[in-house]
Length: 370
Image (cartoon, rainbow, N blue to C red; front, side):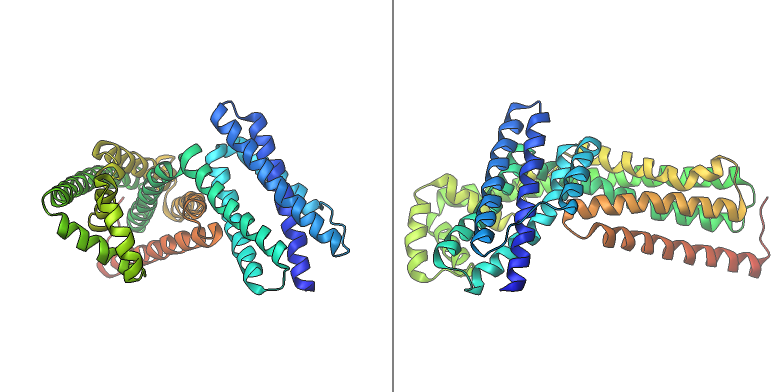
């Protein structure tokens, strides 16, 4: 189990570092709910660290906290100051998922004594349940991240579209003011288009969800037999046997609220309360699109033209896209560097194609605007 012990040494160091991080967060938190949550998480992570420490000592090893763990703690605390609790914890929990998967593999391996395996099972549950509680109940991460995620994708649209426009025009227009003006017009049009689209989309989602939810409530009230059949089909689809279904469905039918809740999620998908308000959706989409459009336009506003203007627009937009990609990666749980590279690559591909088309048109048609 040499390789397993190596993993356990790393797990001990990670759990100990996590405990210290949550403890420091608790000391700095001003909100009492967050403070208590971080203190509780610190104690849980410390108990996990103690468990692995004792296990390693029994195995003849005396683990210590290395420089890498100290650096991890330092940077996570730095990120907390720079980004706040929400983004830092989301970034932090990305690594937790990998740890949970490793714990699960070790749990299934059969290499551990039954008493150790049982303790590991409880640890896995604690990691999952307390992460869920922290993210959804204490930090309110899900509604916030859904809003930020949509805004960030709006920024990506603006960066790609407006950058392609100004770069394409810069290949045939030498006057930077005209390129900047064209970029502002394209950015403004995109802003209004994104805002209107987001408003109508959110409004339509709410209306559809509300109408379907109302039908579910009426069906449960006037046709409980149909609702019961749908519940049974739902649970069978989830893999439950007939015996289990026959035991669960009658109990649920005794609670109209529980029955309606399950059928709403099954038939409606997105509940009305889970859809952002149309006004907020429009504001997020429009505002972030306009702000992102400023990056590719700025070099031409500052008077750069030709190749220097194009390169400056590309660099400023690529940096903004990289930051956006890292943030989206943190939010969605995808590798931040991979997401940043993907966004920058797609944007640069679109820009190169647009610039090539503009240059080709200039050469073929002899167009050159001053």
